[in-house]
Amino acid sequence: MPRKLYEAIKSSLGERYKQCAAKQALAIVKSQRKRAKKKKPVVHNASLELDERFIKIEHGHNSFDLWIKLSILNGRPIYIPTRKHRMFNKYVNEGWELSRSCRLRKTDKGLFLDVFFEKDAEPVKEEGDIVGLDLGFRKLAALSDGQIVGKELKSEIMKFYKRKHSHLIIKELINRELKKIDFSKMRILVVERLRNVKKNKRGVLTHHANRLLSHWAYRHALSRLAMLCEENRVQIAEVEPRGTSKACARCGSRGIRRNERFVCKRCGWKVDADYNAALNIRDRFISQGGYGPLPESHLNISFG
Ligand SMILES: [Zn+2]
Image 1 (tube, rainbow, N blue to C red):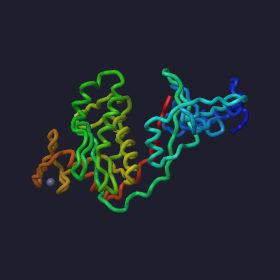
Image 2 (cartoon, rainbow, N blue to C red; image 1 turned 60 degrees about the vertical axis):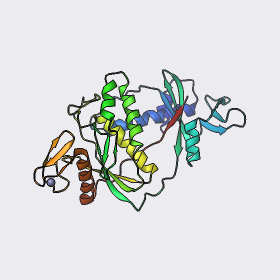
Image 3 (cartoon, rainbow, N blue to C red; image 1 turned 180 degrees about the vertical axis):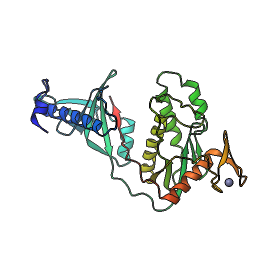
Image 4 (tube, helix red, strand yellow; image 1 turned 180 degrees about the horizontal axis):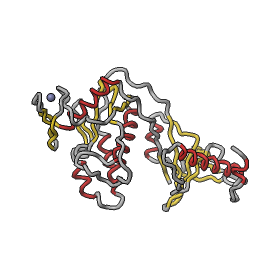
């Protein structure tokens, strides 16, 4: 880290904090460099990524079972008493370890400290089925092993999608439904790669809303699935999304989709359209070898 980068920061904070802030600023600028279309980065909520030089979480022995030691400025550290919450205990009980770095976040509701849990990834299962999964709006997920979750998603979303913060409610609904998937007999879960969408399509619903999840909801569901797969030691793989809902999974010729039904003109197969798509997704992976695993997901829990 070049010295002139952080010496320019006007603040009464100590040098280590300035270094930390400069490192973070550099990372934000660098992340823009990779993008095809570069924009000036905008910071909406101020946050500090703090490593163990600045913050330590210590276990307490009195009524507060957790103490946060914050070394701001160059004087004495500040101790903040707090308590472990339910999620904290859940992760500890499942063998996760508290990461040494934290994130201090300022929002309009106050200051929050995000703590992170880490765990060595367990090896993926070697036994089990390869299962295709079709994400949609009418049914959240149809799987090639016959499972279906989120049948009521559409009607639930329609109730409130014009309300403010509806995207947060939709994310919660997606999380709740995906959790119902039974991964026990699976070895590999195959999903469709995120479609490229034209920009400015940021609404809750897309123009073919009857069938597809909007871009952000699809992305959210994918990252949630990646997390669930990791927890269940299932490998997740992606295939190209084109045409998986149009071909007949039995004979391969083009069929017609009428709402929830898929009808094949050649072999006469009549089947649930999303189930047919899930079969095609699975078979595409088997025949092509797929696109490999999704990027790793991060777990993060915050308490304020
Ligand atoms: Zn057919």
